[in-house]
Image (cartoon, rainbow, N blue to C red):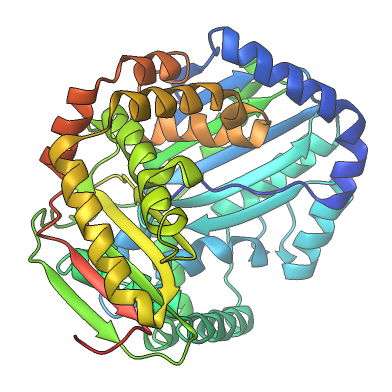
Length: 455
C-alpha cells in the first residue's frame, strides 16, 4: 500500500534554508488552513498528469513523479522487482539529452554539488521518484536535468544490482526474525490470498531478479502516460509546465498496465498462531476494506479515530490498555489503496495476557460495529481531527504528499479545502452504517506471533 515517494533535505540544504524555512512554513500552514489551496492541474503534451502548487515563501522546489509501477505488477516469483527498479534509479545513467554518462559516485557527487536530494521508492500501487532542490540558478536546472537523465536512461549496473540485492535480502531476513514483521506478512497473505497485495518479497524472490528484469520493468512501466507529476515550490505556472514537459519527454513508450485481479472482498475468519521466543506476543487482525475513492472514507476515518486510531483517546486504548493493562499498545487502521486496502487492528501484550486481550478486542470491535460511537466520542474525534488539520500541511513535504495523493487517486482539486467540512458533516449514523458495511468482525484473519499455543 503505497504512499507518495518523498525525500528529505540533505544536511547541507537544511543549513542553507533553515533561517527562512521556520517562519515561512508556519505562515504557509496558517494561510492554507484558512484559504483555498491553489492547486493547478493539467495534462502535459507527453500524457503525464501534472499538479502544481506555487509556494514562493521558501526558495526551493519539491518534485514528485508517481508511476503506475508498484509491486502489484511484480511477476510471479520475483516479488521485490518494483522496489529494486525504483531504488536503483540513481545508481547510474547513460548519456542522455547532452548529459554525460554517470556512474553511481558521479551521480551522488552531482547532486551534492547542487545541494539537492533525489530518491526512488515503490510500494504496492506505485513507484517513482522525489526530488528536492533549491530554486536558484544554476542549481535547479542542473538538478532537474540530472533527475530527468536518471529516470529516462538508468543503467542498473550489474555489480550494483547484485550488491543491492544482497542488501535487500539481508534486510528481509533480519525483518523476518521480528514478531511484528512476521505477523504483518502472515496477515497480508491471509487477507489477500489471491492478490498481489498479499505477496511479500522473500530472499528467494529477490535472488531471482536479474538486471534484465529491472530494465524490462522500467521500460514497461515508467512511461509518461502512466505518470503523475506533482510540483510545489517557488516557481510560476510557466516554469512548472516546462519542468513537467522536460522530465517526462523521452520516457519509455511503455505498455498498457497489466491486468490485476480484483480483491476478494470476503475472507473466512481464521486464526494462525506462530511460536516465537520474543518476550511479548504480537497480534494482527484484518480484512479487505476500501479503495481510496470510497464515499464512506470520511465516515470511516472519523469512526476509526474513535475506535483505535486516536491514540489514548480511542476506545481500544482506553479499554484494553488504560483500564485493564492488557497491552503495551493497540490501534486500528484503514489503509485504502488503488484497490481495496485493509482494515486492521494490531496489539502487543504479555504472552500470558494474549487470549484475554484478544477476546476483549474482539468484543469491543463487535460492539462498536453494532452501535457506533457515542455523541461525546464523535464530537471529540471530529474536534481533534479538525484542530490537527494544519499539521497535515505544515511543510512543503507534507503538502507534496497530500497533493500527490489527490493526483494519484483522482480526488477533487478542492479536497484539502473541504477536508475539515467533510469531517464536520459526519454523523453517528453514517459511522455506524459505514462500519457495518465495510467491517465484518466474524470474517477477519487473526495472526498471533509469540503467544501461547491454541487454547
